[in-house]
Image 1: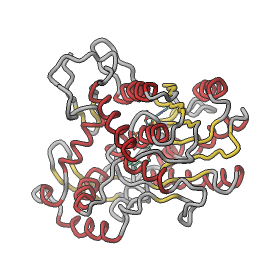
Image 2: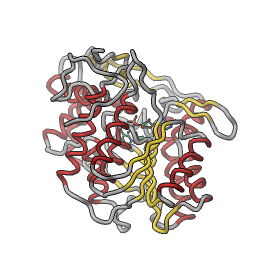
Image 3: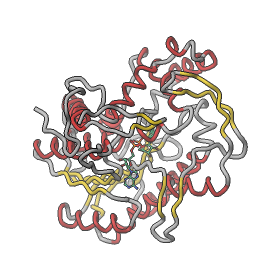
Image 4: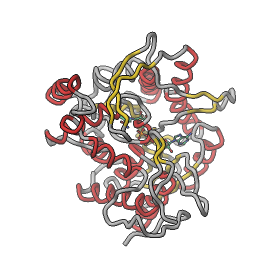
Length: 392
Ligand code: NAD
């Protein structure tokens, strides 16, 4: 079938197998080009491994660190007439890349919030690795069925307390407009913490600890976003911020239990991913941020951020902020970058978008998430949705 992007709001319902494979290949090549990193853990578990920051983490630990990995993600497999989720193709492409370079790569697709998937992973670690050295928690989910109560909870990306009016972007129509977002109810706020907070991370560590699978120098990372005053009203001061505060609390509790530097929250920069596209304001903020950071020679996507994380912040002695987080959002939040973003913000409108922001970069990055728009792929050619072709 001919596979073209089919965009519905902030998601694309199709994905291109060869395009996804190219996207993975380009990230692998970037990391290889930067050279090996000495001293990285060799047995790595990545939760949320198939896209965005989790995929980048799996690629860097494998191709720069020489790790064997187990990845977990939630995917839609393909059918004869329907494409799979992009993450399904990315997982197959990653496995091909890793295995052909001699690295073990096992992927378990299912609901990482469930006890069943935790059991499967524990069993796989027992058979494959014995123990693990590093767990990366890079999950971003819209909903979670609680493994104890069976309750299905949905996250809501909303402000707390009162409604906020925010400038935002319709990425299809290239229109800037003001939106009023109503505050979350208490129930919505609690559900968002249940889905995106630290409880499941803690449950993973518990399951691995009980099974005796935490290696002597075990460490774990969980990713967060702090953002700037432009995103605070919808993010850090809203329901998601509450969830991320809960992740910070979980990290502190894990450090108490497992040792001072074992568990770290890592603050990363705003990047175009499936999860971030769904957050109001973030796409508009991102288009301005990308324009400014590119002009200043500081632009980074997921792979560049995670490569920098492992190259420059992995040492046990790495500096942390007052909450014990590793900070990779330092360039985004630097004074010159934020001053320029803030200068442009009030001037932003549908008319000025072209000169003040970089919507093209945003759209290109968004399409790439689903394997579209990559050089070297003929998108008019018949493609088999059932598998990922081996690249030359
Ligand atoms: P993403 O949408 O690209 O990836 C989410 C991953 O979670 C996917 O692999 C998906 O399959 C997996 N997943 C979702 N539900 C699952 C389930 N039930 N079971 C198993 N796997 C499941 O998201 P992302 O933007 O890379 O986000 C990863 C982390 O990085 C999040 O904690 C996010 O807050 C953080 N972060 C993102 C940004 C950003 O701008 N994108 C910035 C800073 C921090």
